[in-house]
Structures are given as C-alpha cells and as structure tokens.
Image (cartoon, rainbow, N blue to C red):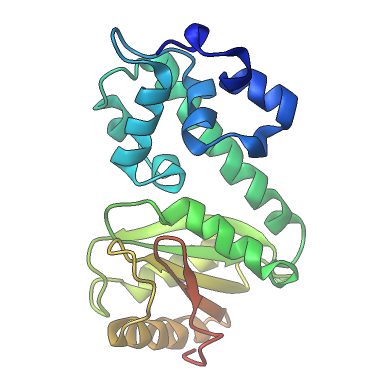
Length: 224
C-alpha cells in the first residue's frame, strides 16, 4: 500500500514526529530514507526486502556501493543516501575515539568495529592504530580472506605502524559465520603480531573478534 493510502498515524514520518524515532520499526525507518518504492511495491515493502536481503540494519550499513547497485529499485540517489548515512554513523562513533583514549569507552570501540566489520560477507583483518595517548589515528583494513598466521604479514602491520608513528594497536577481524569465538589460529596470529610489533615498541592492546551482534575481546578472555 502506498504511504499516502495509510492512515495518518501509521505513516512513518507522522509516527516519528508524533512519537519519536524509537517508535518506528527498522523497516519504517529505512522507508523514510528511501521515500519511494517501485511500481506495484510500496516503499515499506521495499525497505523490508532490503533488510531481509542484508540481514538487518547492521548488514545493510556494512553493504558496499557495489552491493547496493545490484538491488532493483535502488537508483543512484537512494544508494548515495544509504552510503551517506552509513558514513555518518561511522564518523559519529569514531570521533570520540580520536579525541580521548580508547579505553575511556571500550564499548564504543566494539560498537565502531561492529559497524565497520559486522555485516561483511568476507573475512577482513583490520588494525586500529593509536597514538601515545591511545587515541585513534586510523582504522585500516590490512588483509582479506581466510586468516592464518601465514596470510597476515606482520611486516606490513609493522610498516604501517611506523609510518603512522603509532604507539599501540588494537587488532580486529570478523567472522562472517556470525560466531565471534576466537580460534586457535586467532591466538597464534595475535602472538605473532605481538612479537613483531614489540620489536619496534608498539604495544598490542587487544584483538577483537567481530561476529553478528557480538564482539569478543581476547584481552578480556586472557588470551593476549
């Protein structure tokens, strides 16, 4: 049903203004962003199909421009709006990490990485490079593919740490399966990188494993 045919109190925009954004379902929030559907398909139906396709808002926010380009009904304007909202969310979470030590808000670090990595369908190894006060300098994706001790090259991580004049790092990778439990390979990789970075006086503060809806800290597990 087109939005104009819905009762006024059921239209997403009117609901948001009357009751606040928390009153809207995920599909209704996305429908507000998309504004229009397709011929014979209302915008709320289109929004829900997008959520189903990507596994919810987290998955959608992790979608790439190429992912969105494959979706019927998402023209350049809609794709640009979704990508812009994704980037706004990332920058909003990253800003406090650049202004204060990351351990002032450890949950914010987990939220940031969940947004960056949680919805990806492929495995990514990333590094948060930190300054001497443990503020975020950069988050960089270093490697893609199945992670093993031999597929991640410590010299590349060391090289970037030195180029950025980093004093410490937080390692991170995702498990596309959704399970955030560290594996034995994750433990071996962590120790390998810890040894390599220690040679140039760069500390490894943590290694975070990102699943769907969960981020596990290896430091908190006593695995670092």
